[in-house]
Every structure is written in structure tokens, then in C-alpha cells.
Image (cartoon, rainbow, N blue to C red; front, side, top):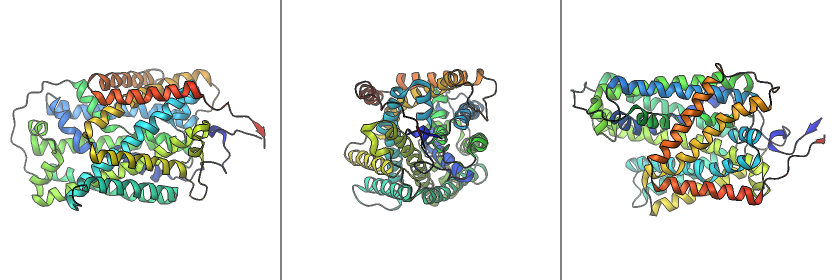
Length: 450
């Protein structure tokens, strides 16, 4: 019986094993997507919409586009289950150097930056509930990173249990906002609104809010009965999220009107204030803090697994590729990722440029590799035609082509509408490409008899 030394062929004793149930996988997926974005983005989408119907249509269309992408990921996840997720697909399709650049980008740009950003969102709202002085937000953010790292390092079972309860609280918080807007707050009087924006730009903000469902790919090697459950799990999560997002925006629209939404940076807080006065402000602070913490925990969970995949293939990062069998978790990857996020939190305490800069820093790399994963579906269909595919994307090649074109458009938008942050992120990405060319990957895994 052949055994490979790379991540793609590790024995069950040396690496990930099916230890995650369906509901835990759903809690991680929903927890990542349903973050603080639904409390921030609706105002931006409303400003770019010509009518309430157009705005609600943009949110429904965003869910449909995300569903198309999820079908592509479901085929890849079922055919090639791996803790490496997107890293694994890109490596099989385009080789180890390209996969290294992706793994480097997740480690240095996408995941670590996202964890620090979400920790600061949590810190800002936690400070409103429990102020700790001048550095309150940074202290709360650092505590969040330490807590998340400790929980997930302890083991996959403990980490999943915490994620499950955080996601339940997160869903309850959004449900409270929906109830407040639809049934408690008085209906808004008409406010003049000049919808001078474009649907395309509105979709940029909508799809950023839907972002994160792709992280389910990193659960494929650990999801029990993954070949059968990955597709319904992903589709079910996105259908639920689309319904919640449309209902939330319908609630904002009823309570504030389209013009009121466009003029407010805190639509949820305004709805809660109109429904329950000052008590509503406290409730929304708790809801957003929980949402940010839930997304940060789930982001850390999947981010450590891509770091593990990188370490398994490249000697320079070998320490990241160690699987902690006692807790069924990539322990070293969690510690490194947590340390890097803490460093970013520390820097942010002295020189924070806000949410927009973080989006600029991460978005181009994110959409570039999204496009790469879409292409990998075409490449692997041709390169490995005999691989077992329990699920195939319907209407191939139309749906994967739509996914690729959407990703290209968002890559263009993330460069055209952003500033210095995008160029800093691009520089870090190019540095990773230089490392891949100079250092090169470990030679292909040697097959040997077991």
C-alpha cells in the first residue's frame, strides 16, 4: 500500500481525520460569513441603489452568485478532500510554486489580517460595554486573539463546541435586529434619495458581505462523510444566509427608508434605537461584538489549516506542518497565526487606518486566488478526468465561467476603487512569489511501501 509524505497523501495517523460533524461545519461556515459586514455594508449598498427593490435585488443576486461559487467548491471538495482546501486544488492544478504564493498570501495577508481586523471590531464594541482606558480596544482585541488561539489549540472538539454556541448567539443577535425593524420600530417616513450609483458597485459591497463561505473547503478532510455532505452543507448555509440578509435589509428599509439607510453608517444601531431606545444601543453592541468574535474564531480555525498545508510541502515552513494528534489540530500553525495576529493588533494600537485600509490590503489577493480556484475546476476536469467526482457542477461550463468572470470583475474593482493598501498587499504577494522562485518547493513526495 503506497503512502505519500506530502499533505495530499498523509496517513490518517499523521494528519487530519474526520472529526467534524455536519452541524459543526455549518456553524463554522455561517460564523465566518455572518460577521460584522451585515451591520456595516447595507448603508453602502443603499447609497448605490436607485430603489428599495433594486437594493433587495442586489442582496438576492449576491446570494445567487455565491451559490454558483459554492457549487464549484462542492465539486472540488468532494473530489479532492484535504485540510489544505484551496491550496490543495491550486497545487494539483498549477503546481507547488503557484500554491506556495497562495499559501503565503493567506498566511501574510488574508487570514492574519482578517483575524486582527475582526478582533479590533470586537474590541471597539466590547469597549462600549467595558471600557479599559486609552488602549481599551487594543486590550480587548488582544484578549480575543489569545482566547481564540487557546480554544482552537486545545483541540478540534473544544473549538467546534465554542464555535457552535457563538454562531447560535450571532444568529440570535441578527434575528433581534430583524424583529426590531419589521415589527417594533415605527415605519419610516419617505426620505428623498438620489440613487446615482451603479448596481455593479453595489454588488462589490454585497459580495464582500457574503465572503467567507469558501472557507468550508478547509473542512473537507475533517468533515465526516464529506463526499456526500459537502454540497448540501454549503448550499444550505448560503440559502440560509441569503434569506437572513434579505430580511435584515427589508427590516432596515422599513424602519429607516432607503434615504435613511444611505445616510447612516450604523443602520442596525439606528433601527434598535428606534425600537427600544438606549437599551437597543447596548443590545446592538453585544450583537456586533459577538458577530466579530464568531467570525474571528472561524477564520482562525480555517486559516491554521492552510498554514498547515503550506508547512507540509515547504521545508522552510516545516514547523507549521505538524499535526497535534492529541487535540486533532494543527497546533503550531495556530500558535504562529495567533502570534502574527497579536503583532498586527499591537501595531494597530499605534497606527490604525480603519476598516477600509484592511479591505484594501486583503481584497486584491482574495479575488485573484478566487479566480484561480475557479480556473482549477476546468484544469482538473481535463488533467484528472478519471478522479472520482461524487458531485459535478450542473450546467458545466456555464456556471464555473460565471464564477470566474465575477471574480475577475471584483479583482478589477478591488484595484480600481482602492488606494495604497492594495499596493502594499500586492507588494507582499510579489515577495511571496519571489520566495517561491528562489527557494522552490520540496521535491515531489516519494511514494514508498508501507
